Image 1: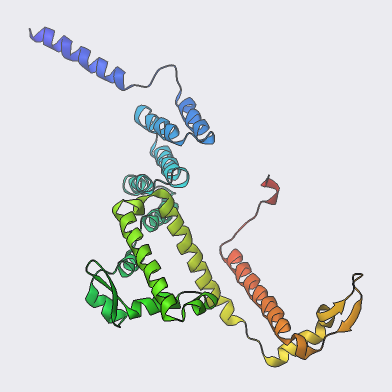
Image 2: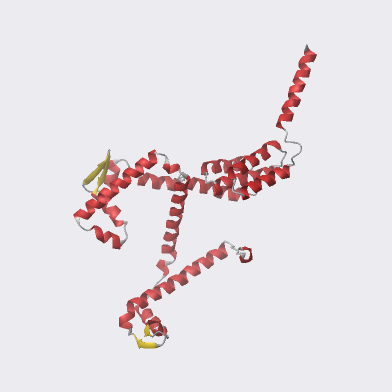
Length: 308
């Protein structure tokens, strides 16, 4: 009986090992090559499945395993916009393969995932301020008479004034009358209602919404940086405007169809245009100087010949 039991156990062990082994007629390199081809043909989910099969069924050293997990994570991040799955894969590299040379990039991608998922401290703080539900805090930050309610949330005159102040001046001027302000208030409440409904529907986790929000945040950050490091550096004196006019007089003259000067416009007539042109030129110079410094600092290289 014991002998029979031993034979059965041996058979089970052999069968179990065989069931976990890769198909003998497929080499490991072929599986990885196939997974890569799937990515090239935009079959991303199938590619991830093959990479997981590759990890589960073949004997691979730690460096290779970290690289494959990184490919899987990048596929989730860049191709599928599935930032939760990408985050899980990057964290796996961080915890299981901390010695990997990829760790610097992995850490950057972890931060990027958290930003897109609105789980970084800064993003969460901004979200908390935007979705202010405590009426006492609203009144404290933006005081004024209560002009509308959404459930328990109060909207004050301060809220309305703040929202109007965020509009471009040309648009803001259209809402000076009480009637126009009431119209804006109703539109504002409608937007808040739709936003609340969208959040309850889980659209804040929609990949397109997350990516769009991240891109908008990125552009706002870039604009803020340009304001601080470029626009504030542009200093124009009154004498500079006149000197620029004298050096570029032909640009401000009336010309015929052949490009010949018919009449030279006086400085007083084109002063505003000259000032704008000078500002644009100085802004562009400051911008190019900033970019060149960044390119050198980050050791940027362009491979123009590789561009198709």
